[in-house]
Length: 280
Image (cartoon, rainbow, N blue to C red; front, side, top):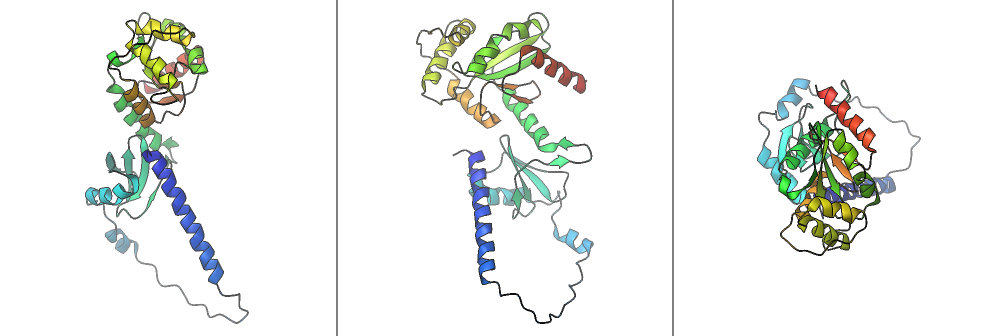
């Protein structure tokens, strides 16, 4: 079970426990009374300065303690723990999966952290940085690359499956992307999993002497000669899962932004150009 599944299961179990406790309290609650009730004034609130003194600061937060608290819940320690703009709340990163945790490790929640003033998704920003780092470690020899014709304006990394209809549709437009200055770097993602027929087909492509030609023929429905070699298919499938790929084609820009699903070539070029313009 991967960490994302474990997180979902954990949150679901906590919700069920909360509902059960609420039902138990409702069952034993006394019937409403018509007697006069004496109202007691609430205690004076604790001064903000006192509360602030109790809360650990970013400088004093115990990362080792947070690791110890999170490890049994998620099957391992986070890849990193860092402060968020919210005082006392920390981002714990498991690959591209994020949770947010209090400084003492008692409270945590999942979901995206949004900066309301700028309407910026801070969680997605963090995921994008992580994706960029992970993708930058993939060597060209482990990919099937269709290079841009002339100057390369953009590099698009595509997780692909040879039996995926929209992957086939996208591949028919690769030449159009190349003409527009977009290099397409394919990584293997056999959706049916390791050992499946799709896995065997894509291994044949990655082991072929001419991987570009083999991929094109395979996506056209031609049978590629069976061939075994040391290949990165399983490793790239695992990488795709870490990056959050749950369908193909899954596209990633150079900065780590994910574009899920098929887009026509002209739309892709516009998306990439617009993103580059905003950065500049």
